[in-house]
Image 1 (tube, rainbow, N blue to C red):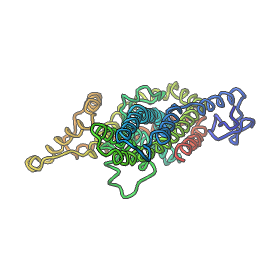
Image 2: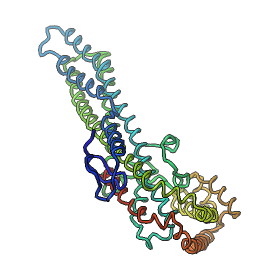
Image 3: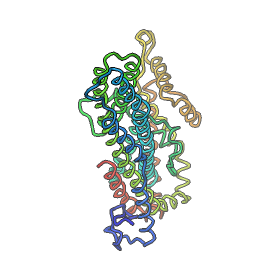
Image 4: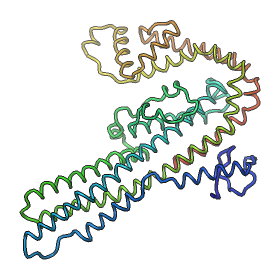
Length: 438
């Protein structure tokens, strides 16, 4: 049983034998035991079969112990026979083991990527509900809620970055349990590195730790694959017709030194991925436990309040208008190829509509856009001026609606009695962010 667990109220570290947390919350023995068991399962979980590493390293060592050519040969045929035995060992034993181990690490990276997506998805869902539903989208400065805005932006960026680095699509993560996270939140997450991470990162003057890790993963695995393929090609070429056995063996040994470096790199990569698996699993348990303990009852109370439900039903047109505005702003930032002559021969409104159609198809949001304008009973903006006027007018109308209704919403028990507990949840998010970024 672990000695260090965490408080189910605030997420801070807690010794198992401590009665009360610094936040003042007292946990039952049953709660402590459940958390301790979950953390123990995390520590005991093995993502990559350790035998793959051991067998590969043993095979590599066996190559140097038993398959090196002798210093003296009386017959060239004897040298060629030993060389062929060495080549056969490489082809049938070492290289397949390296490849199996490498593929297992790549599969583990996909698993951890999905774990990351789940953690970041929870952060986005929690912060979005706090800001949009509990306190209201226009009261961030009023209530000092900028920290939740920061965590929301962090979650959205890291979610997009993770999906891009791991080359995940939404279909890849359909099995991820996001709880009550809605499609509107997922749709708000765009790829931040949409044209391929290495291509984009190469343009930067400085790289973050995450940037370096991205390149390390992409280039490292590519180099490993090329080295192994290169040795395989060399074996194939030299074993067909060998004239100078010593010379061929010398060249082969140079390649084998590089494979030893690849094996060392894979060992480091395996340790790192196992460490990440534990960190993100722990973060997920902290978020899940504290959310169910603190926020879920509050959110459920709010979602069952008739005053709030009436407010949310009437707010639907405003939500759709804001989603439309968001999509149109995304389109303005979407790069497309344009024809010089087309721009020259068309007026600015025609160019706006032509570019708009290309952008929305490229973004893949045409069907959703059609749904929204059908619901709102409006048409596509004919010009940039039309869109900007729509954005200003509808945002002001939404702000006025919120201003009037928030006065009433602040008085309902679900909000008035729970505001402090919701604000304190920033401490849980801080704990999680610290775990996964340090």
